[in-house]
Length: 125
Image 1 (spheres, rainbow, N blue to C red):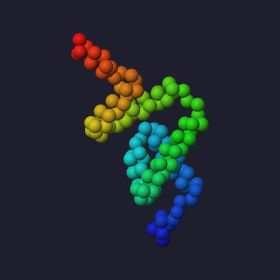
Image 2: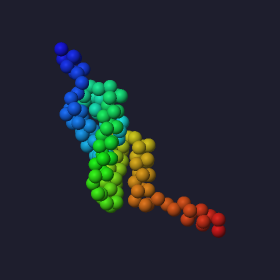
Image 3: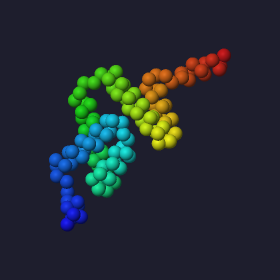
Image 4: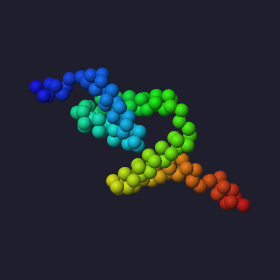
């Protein structure tokens, strides 16, 4: 009987809670793959169903951002915090590729990237 109960469709309220939890995880800086895996495992769903919930969570975040008048410094600060968190998690997990890509994104976001046009001008002279 427990197997049958677990196969029942989620109510609208349950679905909203799942989407809300996924949106919270995304807002904390977790990637879509991590969120999808968490949703699938936690609620014993297929990957396809979990991806739909994750997509709905992204849409919820987009709607929230459109409704809230965030300034550029606020968004930048949140992105910096999320990227720093992602770098730290990647270091702990030994994922050097993730460390590099997140660090590159952080460098560009903060405007710390080297100006390649300046370097090329100096080489021509």
